[in-house]
Image (cartoon, rainbow, N blue to C red; front, side, top):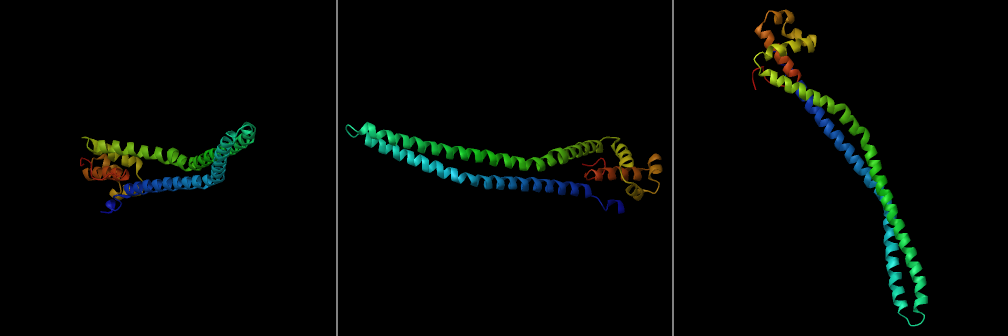
Length: 204
C-alpha cells in the first residue's frame, strides 16, 4: 500500500505549476496595462492643448470670415485673423503630436515590462510542458500496447529514484529479470504515476 501513497503527486504538481504560470502571466499583463494607463495620463496636457488650439482656430477663422465680409477694409482685417488661426492650428497639431508620442511611449514601456516574464514562460516553462506532454502521450499509448507494461517497467528502473523502487521490492531488478508479474505491474504503475497518469497498464 505504501507505493500508492503518492498516487497523484506529479499530476497535482503539474496542475499547480500551470495555475501559477497562468497567475504569473495574468499579473504581469495587469501590471503592463497599469503602466500603460499611468503613462497615458501624460497625454492629458496634449489633449487639452489640442482641444484649446482647435477651438481657438475655429473661432478665429469664423471671426475672420465675418470681418472679411466688411466692405473696403474686410480683406485687410482678415489677414491677422488667418495668421492667428494658423498659429492656433499649429498649437493643436503640437498637442496631437504630444499625445501620439505619449501613446508610443506607453506601448513601448508596457511591452518592455512583459519581455522578461513572458520570456520565462515561453523559453523556460513551455518547452518543459511540451516535453512532458509528449512523454505522457507516449506513455499513455504504451500503456495500452501488448508489451507496454514491460517497457514501462524498464523505464521505471532507469528513471525512478532508488527509494521508490525499493518500496516495490528490495531486489526489484532481480524481480524484474525473472518476470515477476507483480513487480513488473508495480514498476509500470510507478512510471505512469511519475508522468501524472492514472491507472494501471492496459486500463483507460
